[in-house]
Length: 515
Image (cartoon, rainbow, N blue to C red; front, side, top):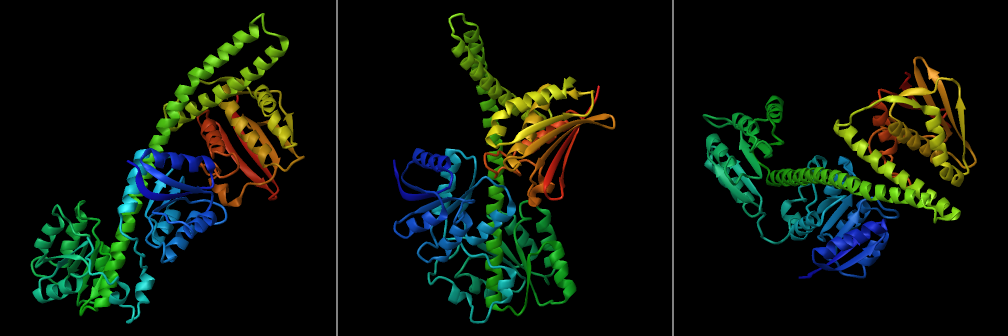
């Protein structure tokens, strides 16, 4: 049955827009509109009615975060469910989006089931609440009362507050204050409070008195934090004690805040709202981390399956082409074309094999089988294979050999991948009509391959250049080139590094053991 909700999909990458649209249609959403950036989305929002926005985070003109801020700031769209799509796992953008009121996150890649789950959660969720920061609480004016800021509806929140105090009058006061806003439970002593907090329906926040007989608030807090089932429940201490040592002791035990008696209603409610909002944000972030891990595992599974499934057909094509080349019925021109296709197929087969090798190296299951490799001959082969790339960039490659000893201890396929990645990167990073120079020379007991090119690496990523996916945002880049070069060098007991010269040139150096 088709869903009635109208969905707006915003992504600057056309294949991803299509993937999201197909995914939505596969789970029953018939009315899906797509656009390429936040600016187009904002124009569509002002002339059409939508029930849900699914937006990429990184886009030109107006990105996902800016679009989210505009949506939440407009009273016409402030409660519109907004799901952010991203391939990044950085905490800062996630926290920024949560603070702005994002409904949920979808981390690429994703499955139809996870897409459906996220949409159902976002569509059925309540309107996002603004997360008050400590600075905002401190700046709260007497006129900024909760009664003025709260919606006029008398509907009680589904969140539960547990009040633990040995004075019935204090409990009555707090219960009457909070009852219009939250579900409220009360315990007359510490032991009952512990039992209620550890029940099958734990509270979302605890207001805990300090001065109680038999078991004081500090002891209750200590036991709550020692129990895995209650350790994450925010605790706000309530006490007439206002000494610095008393306050710091409470924070040291794990309390999130401290309100002194006599209680100021506006301050107490503001603190409760803040810590409940922060608690919700933490739960959402935890959910996103789980999703990120789940999608990471899914990607690994898909990669392994793809690599396995591609090897057989590519091998078959390669073998068929070899037969066609040797077929007496083939013309010379046909043989020439078959050889070109065979070379391309072999390159694709090597890419799949290297990807599988990379996965095994990451998992620690790769078995290194060294032999003597002529690094100069291998470099010449790489230069030949990259000739079209160099020609397109109007770049020439100059190979210089400064030693007669050109053999290293390694694996030919791994060394080919390392050189191919680094030389290709050097070509693409160089200005047009410049040279890439490759020098083969001895370095102590090692053989060094040095790759020189004009142009420098962005200072922001230099320290993390060999990390996975750091360079993924560059044109046609996967972010795996330098990362794979590093781990393939290390598995062969080699060394790899780079340096920037006068902020004009870059030198990559790879050192391997000689026989």
